[in-house]
Length: 490
Picture (cartoon, rainbow, N blue to C red):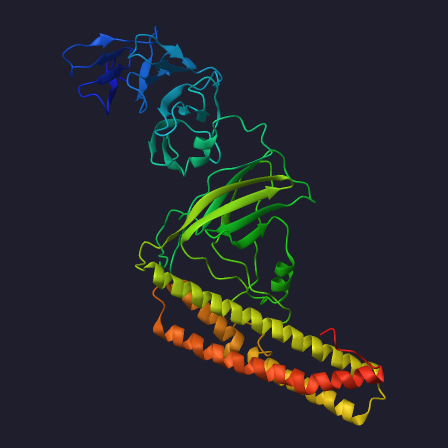
């Protein structure tokens, strides 16, 4: 502040050797294209002010942007100048910016030409049309002076006056807005690829920045907020065009079932795609469709499906008659060294555990339905023949015993396995999670354990089907003849 006529900013061309642009705090701007042997005055601002920042376009030679600040002379208006011909002609491109917020810095996106960021004394602004129009880009950034900016890859790094460093993560959606979205009912931006991370990465007690979400991120724009009766759906397909997951903004019957089975000390939570007007994001945790939930089963490993394998996928977002599909990838953990054959072994093992569990719960539900109807027969028909009553009692008892083989009815909380052993359902669920978390190659012990558990399930399934064939079917025929009940619907 005590000095004057001082070189304040120097910008060096990244393309042309010897090209330098130099701005001073008295408003003068000079350029040399021969390493300083010859200088040319290309000052755009004719009044005294400070050349606060110079941005050389990464897209075109001779194109530059200059932020001029006159606040030291009580002029707080914004000044941004643009040239396409090394300063021979300049145009002001600050119309629409607040009249009392002078500009400290202007930057152009490294990928999308004409997308400009202006850091002012009172916040951030963006232009999608090379400065013809500006709009606020504050988001959660406080209304603070922006002293400098830098586009780094897909991020915008911001230095503020007294509020630290800020980073606008992933400018992909901004780069896709080539035109106004006013006419779009639904617009899906390019998804962010997901990484199938393995287990590990414990937390420390030191302060840490927030990590990226664990999954694939879907970004979309809605012109209007959806009404209560409207639903937004995201269908995810693999490379073979097979549906692997459907996500909905509306709660599902599965969620009601899983909630009913929860441990009260470890409540189940669900996230749904947002349906508010404007920009929305939803993170898919890479998990396939959940298991077929049935009531009154404490499956403390959870009902969620395992994660999908690395590969190519696509997401179709649907709102009413509007639908848009974008492709994305699920990437492997960079720490994992596995070939395609090894990944296929893990995938087949996960599918096998999933099939086993769904088969188990389907048989358990059928057995419970039979038991419930037989209990109803006993309650509604007090004059049953003694042999029929005995048969009903024997079948109900056998179903009780069979159920205790495949699940642990005594489990109520996730710590109850201290008192009562885990049965087949939780053993298979644990094995599924083991395949999911450890990745490829699959552990030899886990593959052997899968064989053992599958053999045990086949044994239990035969046991139940034998009960149905040898006990339930004859009883059903007897009850049908007596007109007491008919189990054929089962």
